[in-house]
Length: 513
Image 1 (cartoon, rainbow, N blue to C red):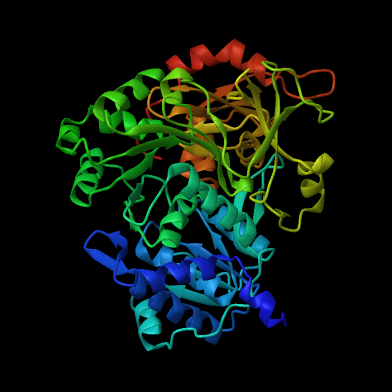
Image 2 (spheres, rainbow, N blue to C red):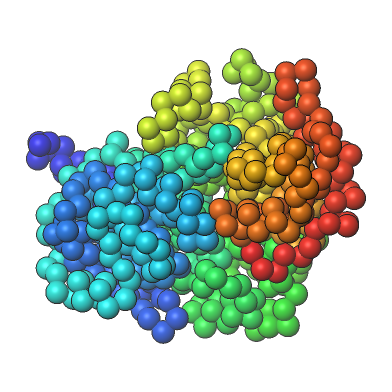
């Protein structure tokens, strides 16, 4: 047990969101279609759900998996985990069953809150619907102060790694609070702001945007997570007086092209953010034309950093167009070589971070954690350069990450699934340009001696074990993969040799993912 003084000095999420609830109990907290929860209602239901979890055996420190679409219950479940002192583990509902099973097993989840019909792989399952509503309605709100402190883990977000299996990034109350307060400061967010995000809530970007407004006692508009309708987004922005929002560049492009864009009051939207993937110059220009009074802000970050780390905003949005900006408050950033030495201004190196918003490590992966924190700085894996004014410019992805429509696709993960097929002897995956998704994965496959294997057969195989956005858009059959003397596949050579022809001849628009 901690002392009363230690208890009173805690700077953790349930304390901060609880204070906002007490100061603005009747203010709308979350709006989802026809449903609205005030801050008092949201916290009452979250407290009841915390009691349900406790009654079903969930203890402080246990992991609770959240397999949920964008909906009010996701927010309730997240707050309930923090009230109980449990660790929330959001899971991408678009993952294949094999991927979901792995995360549930690796995290050791003690409970699962879900609106998706999947087999129960944990002992405690709370299914959104009648079971959820009956349990919440009959429970007494959790009245005890959660025994959580700054260094306790609040969130475990899975991010794929070079081994092909996801790694659980351990985000503490300290890191999430630091990120949240930095976001509020940098964006000058206030109690009267209304936030709308086109990002799924299971992403760190979705949570990174949600928490500031729960802490402030402001309002969040929840958007559908299975379809994207620009007309519907514009209607929500107009109807709810949205002042701040974020979409990926592909979403902004269709929003700006919509005839309904002129229906939004030009005085209303004051911040238009984008992130998750590079934005073409013409998209940024269209945003500025469509929303002339809004600040166009670029946000860049990653899961292990609890969300955004740099912002490009204000006049810099045009003056430094193409840069991802400067570090946010509390983020210390360097661009270094393999020996952790700062590279000269304008030279390319790896982004390294230090600060309170850095993760605690990877769940039960000490070697990966030690590698990521070599030299006591967190190594991002992204290559960039700093200009003479301290603005960061991304150059490449050190680990060949593909960003397709705002979703991260790690080639090693796709390659692992391909190599599990008996007809595949070797495989490599690269990203190629795509007219809708910006990038899309394409696989180069060497057939095994067992006989010919078709493109359709391999794509069907990938669809079974991977989320739709991760499956290759095309399979290119080759006799061998180019490798260096050390046996590493020369992906740059694959891009140079094949990318232009593949992107023109083999990839589709992938309207179904």
